[in-house]
Image (cartoon, rainbow, N blue to C red):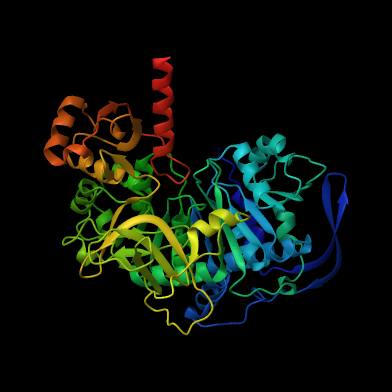
Length: 586
């Protein structure tokens, strides 16, 4: 869907805004603003001027860069750009509009848009108003969106008129929704329960956002991630979580004001939104990209002279099959992987195409933003490692009883520190399962400390070698139990990729009366080739122990389906496979 209309915001973003103290009144299904007096809003007035590294609240990342270099480019979307001064003023104006509408500290504002200027302005503007922003993946359908709106009691929804029109039947079941903000000039939908407001009206009328006090332990965002029950879980993050994450990631990626980062991942995904926070902390530029094909990513890298790219393995697998223009290597300073282990074959192919670019292999949790990274200088020595803890975080590997694991012993990855989130929204049970007090004798926890420290128990199995480098083994809830052995799907997939006989692949366990679970693999043909399942199975037998060899390999045309965050949807493929076989058997 193409619902861009950037010119609407340009007049407001490119001049010093006047704030209007207003009274909001309902007029049928519209909202009108009556002016009481004109007041000048200082530049993001709730926040005192601070040095570059002294940002405490999420909107201060933009404010500090606007103070240092107001004319520096902050955002690019297609042929349009916005500098830090314009972005700062637009964020302030949006915050003013939200306060003028009566939204209170901590109330939720959802954003259901593709990547565009308004998406960024609304996210940071909601935070500046003392509210909580809820970015919704634009690929989600109406009922999925409505579930999120109901789950976290969203008060205002920012979207386009086209998207809002499709949502109207589902929005009738969202009783807490009070306002619908439309970013384009077409006639917005009408709804008696939640009147519509034009984006321009919000930016041009509002009250001083200083009216609402905010501190860094306040929640600022709820990011929804896939849940084991099929319903997404809302991970609650504070200002402190997001600012500490921005500073940490920017420090090891060495982001600076000369960088241009490509935002290719969804902004509803923690690693996608991180492109904004790390760039704004450094005063760098972010290029917003809504791509249809992997080749669109390469075109953007060339056109915008991108210096930093972060993506997930499925995208990198597709990119590695393409011919890369030689000029990319001249300016792409690094490429970073997150959201799963990058296959060795893919990593080698990318490094061959980008000999001067530094590879950063990262591991992260939405519940704690980012956890580890492997320094580029270690990639040749340990390409399968997820590295060590990022700055200002500690990663522990613990046994079931809470005791630290020995070197190379598999245990659960536990993350402690400033990036640990505030739990799952409105879900005490799941929060208690994932966010737990550290055991009393955990390293760094002196016996004299009385109050508990909450850490994220990831549910991921890892091991730590003698030098402290971590290696991902698998997710505990995806581990396959076959012939008495616990097998990670990732291990099987790594071998399949290493054969170079497949394009994409996924492995999962199926119930089996004798084995417990039989390993099933689904693969796609490599670019320009075919798959011979018998030959592939023979190669697997040469490369892995017998208990790990798939019982069957099914071939389908690619690409494999993705979940909303761009990862191969293992659960969907497994459920489809089971359903299809039950139908055949029936």
